[in-house]
Image (tube, rainbow over all chains, first blue to last red; front, side, top):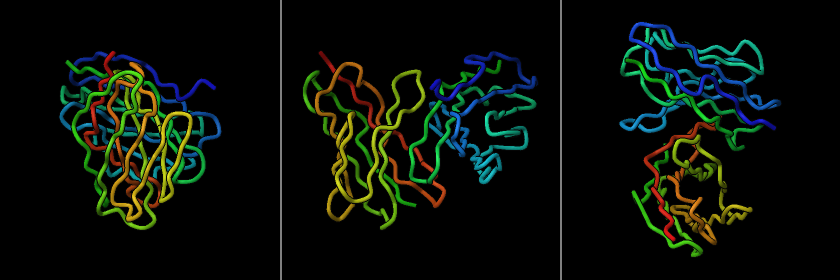
Amino acid sequence: DAGVIQSPRHEVTEMGQEVTLRCKPISGHNSLFWYRQTMMRGLELLIYFNNNVPIDDSGMPEDRFSAKMPNASFSTLKIQPSEPRDSAVYFCASRPGAAHNEQFFGPGTRLTVL
Amino acid sequence: DAKTTQPPSMDCAEGRAANLPCNHSTISGNEYVYWYRQIHSQGPQYIIHGLKNNETNEMASLIITEDRKSSTLILPHATLRDTAVYYCIVRVNSWGKLQFGAGTQVVVTP
């Protein structure tokens, strides 16, 4: 099993540009999570999908952020327009079955907005 | 929501047991305690979780006090590769939201 796959691993962009982060969850997992990690705020949950449906997006910081899950094997997190304060490491995680099961995290995408 | 309190850092000698404490005095009866760790520049990694009984797996042991207000993660024989930030988390809601705190930075020294 390849684990959770994220791309790109590193992204450097300029303020105002659109950024799209991609995630492929582990096959068979029905829950998907996007997190953001910064030194100042630590690891924060942005959005949670269950069976491809967004269940909780209360952590999405503002309208510039959007996430989609068109099918069980793919999700995107888009930032448009990007700002320097969006610089962070973005993690995707997936989870099988019940709510008490473990989450499997991907390697993360390090985003730098200049 | 139940919150957790962990020491910010601790050192451990290679080959010795590492005992990581966590307080969760406001935990409710149906909330699980989870431990994850994050090695530098990697995504968090699940270690173990429990409800009220002690648990053991190939990575660690979890000891939960009888009143469930605190727990201890035990790494039985720490190696240099166990150097990481360790997070103690109480599941926040019904769909399993995990709220990560600052964790404990564990440094294993030769």
